[in-house]
Image (cartoon, rainbow, N blue to C red; front, side, top):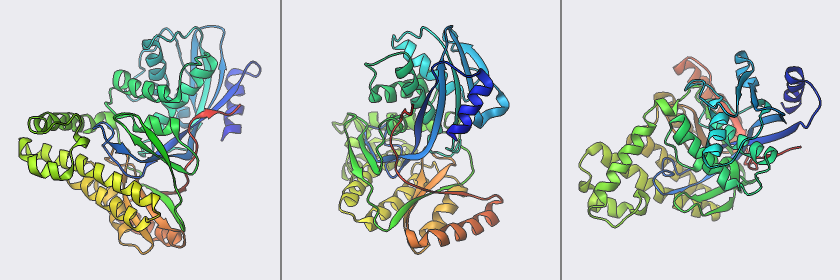
Length: 389
């Protein structure tokens, strides 16, 4: 992939000058879904599926963007003084949004750059191709502009700021944090309220992480994502009339059951129940993984999906079919939807000997029921974004 991008760079922009290469991973969240904007814990890992960038600084203020993943759009040109969004659907909103966030934070952009980008993270799959691109832009900007004080946590936060203020998706911090702070063979146990984190080794003895892409693309900005956040904020205010809590995830499941009638709308009750029980599941799942108890970890994944489907209502028929098929199979320890929802991928923990039958069986049924094939990725945890050369 990178060699092809370097050739494309020379073809589009010519050889010579200071050409640098960078990489930023996608991410999968193992458990802890929709807790990240409710002050809870999440448990993602960075992937070896990635976005790559080939970049050369310019003498003027022109920005040239080109992506092999959206090659039909050609080279998109603007300047560092004009970071107006092309359109809500343009992929350039993510790198431009990050540069916008830098400028908003007071970082000057004295010159432009030529960029060629590409990657193997499927767009719309729920594996954070957008956050990967934002964090990639952060690593590029830190390097070529010499922003030595910019930490990887700062880059994650600026990516989130771009989502909120430029793109219009009121997301949590998990995706950008995982892409920025990932570590090979580890998951990141992150407290999204304090940004305290620790790395937990992903020692899945005799098992692997298998992602199944439903090929149903979601658009978080246009989905119910922002609605869910408002519902949670309202439910929190209602619970605070009876509980001394600052975030939904501070409440325990027992406290929720005792005080749920403070939440006046039954839909908001369901949303709050998911968030509060998901926080408890995430804490239990990390403990189980540390004890190498994959059976318990898998059961908690299954329970997470049921809650996301029934209480948070962010699944869809295609995802539910994939999860149902997976959970019925021998050798599958757990399976759930992952990401914002309304399509994208499932994540399953599958015993190594069962991976072949898992793929064959699910593919056959899914193709017959849905009318198009799924895609499967047997993945491992990779490092966070960094410069290659």
